Length: 319
Image 1: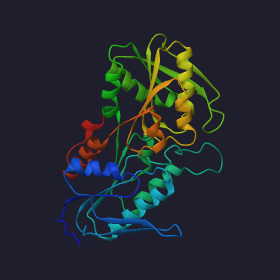
Image 2: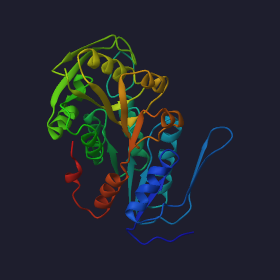
Image 3: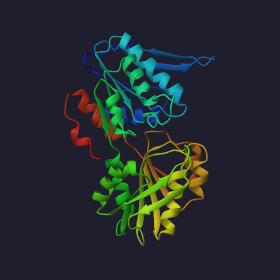
């Protein structure tokens, strides 16, 4: 069994973000912690920490992405194992916070799932949480432990700026809730801002859209935090093209890309979708030629490094 020095930075990962965790570990100049995470034939998950973590400053990197419930359970079991192994501090690094869209009661007798996840992570043993682009910033208030919510803007913006160099640009928020995110993009691209007013009759369905702002003759940049089934951005792209936009590029932090999303993207007016690796890109999405991936490894590594060294990470909160 490996021996670790007291207060040493130790990084573990489950099965949801192994490639990202490997890149983060390389950036930090550390080796990934030794842990066994596997599933029994009946579906139960086994977690075993294969090195001494007593007194260590431990970070567990795991997104709650497909299969979300399995990856959530892996995270909770790893946190519990590390707590029982006497780690000094345990930080749950959750690049993608699953269930974040269920952050309030929208109908009678429904759960607030995002709050339940916060309770589970805290009870399992997390001392603090590091995440990226929460769907709703107020989810930070669901925790009674420190939460750092980083933004992917510093990762996405350079690529988008290069793609639209010399063009007249409009940045578009696909809904009212994303205006702050789109405004930050527009400010740094010296672009105009537009908003799409949409009517959603049921989850994952959009009935109609109205564009508020000027997009005629401009390169339209659709900015969102999550692209799931891609119904919203595909319809938004069509509306923008009909309104006179010359071309449409979409970008988001979390490329969930479930269900018919890739087929919709292929048949859409979107030239490309730019995502980060908070969620591993599926094989079909990778083959589509429509999805570009930018890595958040360096951003996460810098936040982890500063947290371990008890330094401020406020300069990383570029939204």
